[in-house]
Image (tube, rainbow, N blue to C red):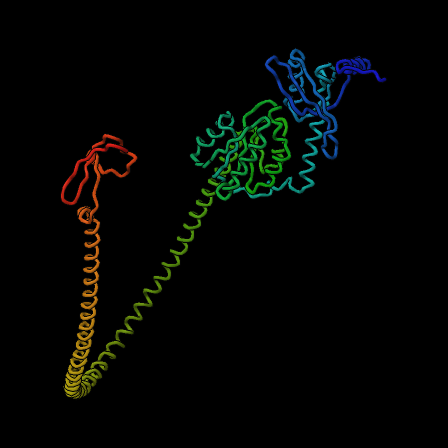
Length: 478
């Protein structure tokens, strides 16, 4: 018969086997899937390994870093790599394999090699850059035309960030008095929530893209580890696809993030972004002043040149005009005499003709009005006859309607009279007095009508009402 083991005995054997197989520590490569800190300062992790091509998880294990070790490893890792010790990164760690009968397998992390993570982060960063280039989107935002004077600015930042306050102060209090419209779209500027909130802000700006000239992404300075969110592929891809030029001022000088690389313009600090916008407005203003001076100068030259031409032309016009006036004055005098004789002849002839026409018109007018007067008399007589006919027809119609209405009302009143008479007879038949006269009686007890014998008992006094009086009685037997 097979030997039977309890669960604790089996787990103890597993523990002994693992202790013999891993007497010391080993170095392993894994990715941090989850990371939790408790109040005692201990760090609890879930380590995983993914298949290279499909990202399918092929291994998983719990791990711990006790508080006294974690206090040393965390700052050492973050100072060396410039990245926060958090989930989603690959690490090379020295672990002790431990197995507890009740809690199972666990890896106790003793040491960490930041150099491996730095290399992996650099590899991931380069892979993101290569992917953007291969997809043909790396330069797309840079190719957008930036307005000569971008004055409507959408700002993505945190309202409490010092960098945002510096940007607003510099923009609004510039020495030239230029005015810019800006609207804040709040987002986290570090940590795991940074990427989704910045992308969400870009989506809100996209809904009003026609209003804005440029998008500014700014934050204040900080540790290099706080800037890793700007090396994210999704964020970079959204910037490349954005239809408005994106200007970054993320607040670091050593290295460009991928967001800086794909943006239209990269500035070192939020203040530098404000100076860039102000400088653009200043260049445009200076260009306008230059054009104004050129226009004024050219206008003066044209006016002076044309004034000289006008003066010369006016002198020639005066001389020619004087000669022309003298010549035409003589011609007008001769023409005036001839015209006066012709007018007198024409007036005399037309005067005789007009007299004849006036006599003819007067005669024809008298005949015309006589004819019209006779026609009016005939029309008046015809209208009078027609009116009498119409009135006669209307009177016949009214007489017919009057007789019909009278007949209808007589029928209605007779019908209502019969109905009222019938109702009076019905009411009279239902009168209690009439019912009593027909031989019926009413039995009362205490002035109330008795409707059932079940409510009565012996010795009850009753009152019987006839049509001509009352009789009192007493129940002797029931």
